[in-house]
Length: 100
Image (cartoon, rainbow, N blue to C red; front, side):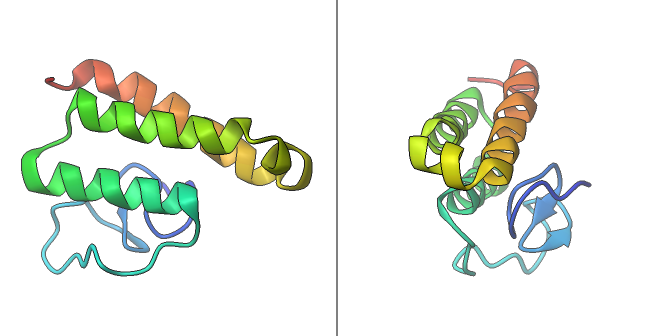
């Protein structure tokens, strides 16, 4: 259970707490901090509803890469870029354990 970024990004980090996405009482309408955090929230919701999948992982990877490769973020938010890159690395590794 590790917080990488915001309220939703990190293994078993959901809605600002060390808990799995399918924990009782998780509110997927709760706010996220930014585009990366919203992508993580969406991924958590998918995992909670039907189990994590490679397709869901691919969506999160694409969103995190978009944030990491954004030139504005690279210049003005280097720590945000590093967190997006961590999300990409973590989900890329985890997706090999998922079903389609």
